[in-house]
Image 1: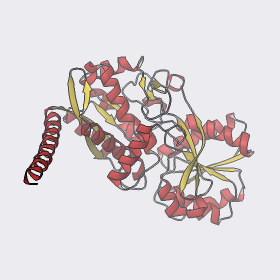
Image 2: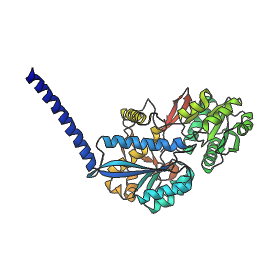
Image 3: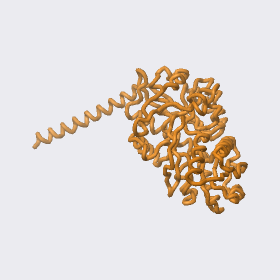
Image 4: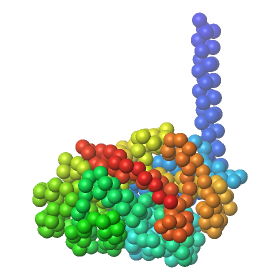
Length: 400
């Protein structure tokens, strides 16, 4: 009995020792890895906080996953990924300060900013300091020559808007449309693009000049004249996630019975808390994945994200892609680690397996039709309809 216990004890201690050595070996290997800093400059506070928070959390989740599994091999070296973040508070001046901070830290690849003003403001800093940045902002001038350092990280409103209006015209009988936007350059630009797209589709635009201040909390005076026109579709151009439920609730309480949509991504939890059942039927651009097309890797990403932050934002189905594209492009051309000119050369022919979609989908750069050069991430265009606390897929499209 004594010998048996001694033997079992030895076996247990041996197993623990092997496990400890293995764990120590992994930690040692990680400690020997080089560090690759990837930046984020964008909004993580205020009414539009959900947009940037989704970016940051997606990057942090993916980086932790990569580091946990040994790092990322680029050329002859292996790197741990370190996400360096800066909240620009949706202020262009702070966005410039954030991009300058990235330059000072020697960071060449930055995700963000999340709005038009910020993305335009940081362009000189990015170009002067050899930084490729991935805005979630739509001005075409950022992605057309002579500009070349910005890469659009999502589907633009002038790409999704026409697709949404066409779908609703053909499937929901929409004939008349009205627009309302915050009195800021970003949503006003999206409104103008939406109006142009609607007219091109033969829809009658019954309202397009109604605006509100971004800190408005009572939208009844803004929406009363629009609701009186009884449009088939009310478009909330460029609406911030915190304002969307307030606008929806105000419209429904005024008796509006038509459809409501936006080309900006939204947060289901915010809609549920702010508008409840009034938000049912609300149409918005969603994350670049649906349950039907999500791979096992996407499901694991969602699980890791949820465990890390206690909740999940559907928009992160899109935001997960920026870091993935950066790392895969660097793997395709390791010389790009410190030379963004090499990165830009690689973009034209780059292709890699898409880990987040089922089947043989590829990561690639697109945007030739919209910008005349490949300055956009190829992510699926998923359009969602909100219902009872969650988003449901309305349809899926693509851009070239």
